[in-house]
Every structure is written in structure tokens, then in C-alpha cells.
Length: 322
Image 1: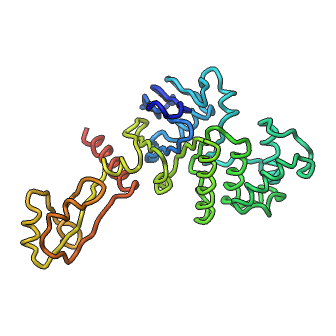
Image 2: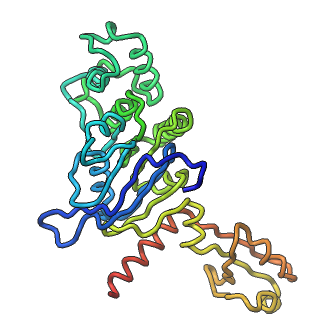
Image 3: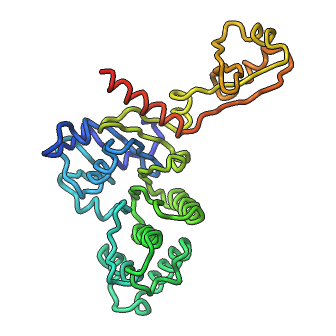
């Protein structure tokens, strides 16, 4: 950790979770450090241990071995203090369907000691009412606050869970597939707000998702498979280290183009074009050596999803070969 970096808000050392009927650990000697105010994403295929890890970090599942500290507190001795400082949105809804949306929020705020409980919305403090309306308006459910949750669609229930998780201004916000079931406009609105919360309140955001494009904006990405950490780094670093950047080229005088590329690894790419990998942020150095006029120039810069697929594919191939 650099001298001016914020202190860690999540510290995981040698974390192991082994289920009784499983022949291998769901989480296998996992190490992870997340600094305060970071936005991190945990990616991995189904069965990689993402949800198990999240469940342990949020105190809802016991670990088998290892050390875990969240928000400055040890998981083994101060689970209650951790729960008071985190917000959670799990894949499976945890709302009371018999209550209205606002009643779910009111009970949550009271249980966390944010506001004293009052029997109606109108009797709650002005700060509570303003906060509820602001968050509900953000996700487009302000007109549904007085409706019972059992009548909500899956997407509306997800929105309500998001509002509830932000009520007590958590130090760490854990998101397990938070936008599943949301339409594109609501997804965009949510992420815009979460980035605002992260920036203005210093909230640490810990995400697991199947929408890998949502992790493109993360400060760091952890990729796991079979309960083990494969790699971690910024999205840009992972894209450079794991996936290929290349040019697809052609020219009327292809023979001269091949001579210009002498010494480089040239293969045949899509549509029969010449494919040449390049290092660095741009291919400018490679292009500078070409003397012949080009008829085709396509620059391929990989996405995080491509890097993820490449890494997980390698891991699966190595496992099969071993």
C-alpha cells in the first residue's frame, strides 16, 4: 500500500469455506485487500465462490478458516459492528411482501437506529421523509411507496432493495447482481447514483455481477475460479496483460506491407486480413514503420469481458489438461 492510500476497509487472509458435502472448498485460501472508498468488482463463472465470499464478508455465512476484517472490525469477534456499517443487496429478495414499500424502509431505518419508529410516514422526521422521497425518485418508484410489495414486479422489488440498502449511509455497500431485472434506464440511473455516493461519501462499493461491462468502471477487479483468486488489477491493466491488442491490415501492395512488417509476428485474421499484435496504449510505433498506403486499418482494443473470457478459458483448459 502506498503512503497516501486510504486504510483498508476489507482485509481477507487465507479465507476458506468448505461445505460438508463438497469434495473441494467453495473458497480456497483467498487473499484480498480493499481500500476505503474503492469500487471493486469480483468476477468469476458460476460456482467460482463469489456469492459464498460475499456471504462471509457480510456475516451471513460462517467461514471455515482464515482472517477477515471489515470496516475495521474482526469478523469473529465483532460481527454486530460490521453489520451496522454495511449495506447489502443480495440476488434473492429479502423484503416483507405484506408491508408497503415505505413500511419496509421505515422498519429498516428504525432497526438501524437511524430514526425512531413512528406508526405512519407522515409522523416520521422530515429528514427521513426527504431521504426516502429522494432515493425513491432516483429509481422511479416514488409513486409506489404506499403500495404493498407483493404487488411489485421483480424489477420494482430490486429498486426498493437498493433504496433500503442506502438508507443508513453504509461504509461498505455489497452488491450481488444489483441490476438484475432492471431496465437499461434504471441500470444507468442506479450506477450514476452509486458513483455519486462513492465520490461524495467515500463509500466502498463491492460488486459481483454477470454484466461484466458494469465492472469496466471499477477501480480494481478480482477474478476468481473454483474458489481461488486468479488475478487482480485495474480493468486497463487486466486488458493489457490478458487479452491481445492487434491491428488488422491490408494494402494493394500486400507484399510490400509484409516486408514493412518484417520481424513482427504476422498471422491471418478475420476476412483474410493481416493480423499484427501491438504493445502499449496505441499502435503508433507499429504504424510508423509502414510505407505502403493501407486499404484496411482496424484497431482492436479488447474489452474487460474479452480479457475475462480469455483468462477463465485458460484456467478451464489447464484444469482439463491436468
